[in-house]
Amino acid sequence: MASPFQACQPAWDKVILSLFFVLYLASFIVMGLDATRWRASHMPVWAEAAGAVSILASYAIIWRVLAENFFAAPVVKIQEERGQRIVTTGPYAVVRHPMYRAAIFFLLGTPLLLGSFYGLAFVPPLVILLALRAIFEERTLADRFPEYAAYAERTKYRFAPGVW
Figure 1 (tube, rainbow, N blue to C red):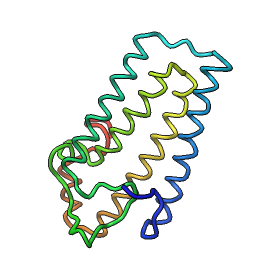
Figure 2 (cartoon, rainbow, N blue to C red):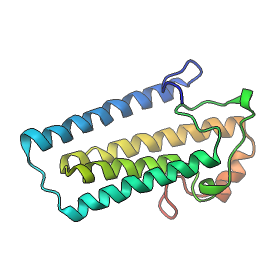
Figure 3 (tube, rainbow, N blue to C red):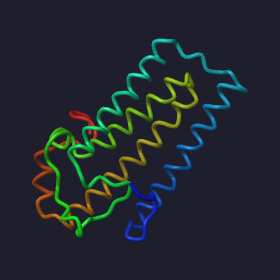
Figure 4 (cartoon, helix red, strand yellow):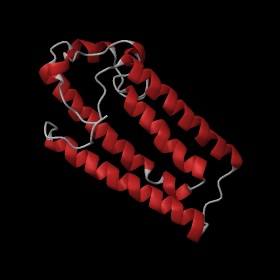
């Protein structure tokens, strides 16, 4: 995996990733302050356990995605030199962006496991940024791969079946 900022990367992706990284880092700062200075959150043990399960689920999904999609990359780019194609099997047969789905499990699980209600406040804006990225990424894929429209019609949901 290379740097999250590359020359061939669209400008919109650099902006979204920059905002994502700033918010993500801020979430850890806030969670750290919550645990050490403010001591405001008192998460029940069952919620912390749910956070651990959510993080483990994210790793399982990521492992499956990487096993299925050899073109997975930290940036949005078309890898013509590697013969990139649209992957439609495995987790991609269920949702169009299973890696983002895994990220959502991780983003939700982390503040739960660390016991920070303040950390949970960062989850919605981070998920919104992932959703924006998915929309722009799909436009990029549809422009390059004519078969993407049929795939999107077959696999109706981006992150979660029955939700979005």
